[in-house]
Length: 103
Image (cartoon, rainbow, N blue to C red; front, side):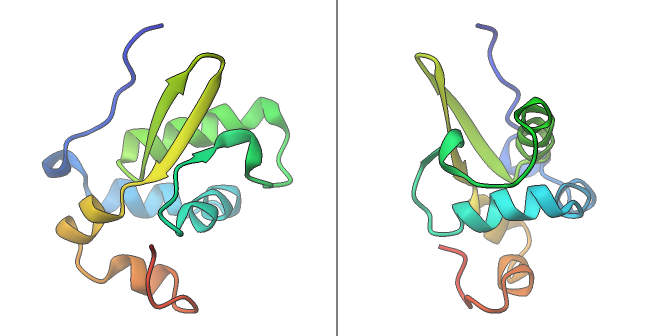
């Protein structure tokens, strides 16, 4: 399997993050990851067809919002909360006002 693109902390841009978070399915994914626990992608209920979830994971991964790793036939996702907080302090608190803390 080819290596996946994960931008470095310095490569994460606000424009890419906001564009990635601008879709309801991707917001559901990020909200599910806000606990900070690595999650198997099949455990996140989005209501979206499986055929489109790969696209949503790619957008979130390439924007720097999530980290995706393969293990066998499964994909595991984590929110890059530390990187996002370092680049854009307070952004996750604004995106998730009801939780006050993203993780």
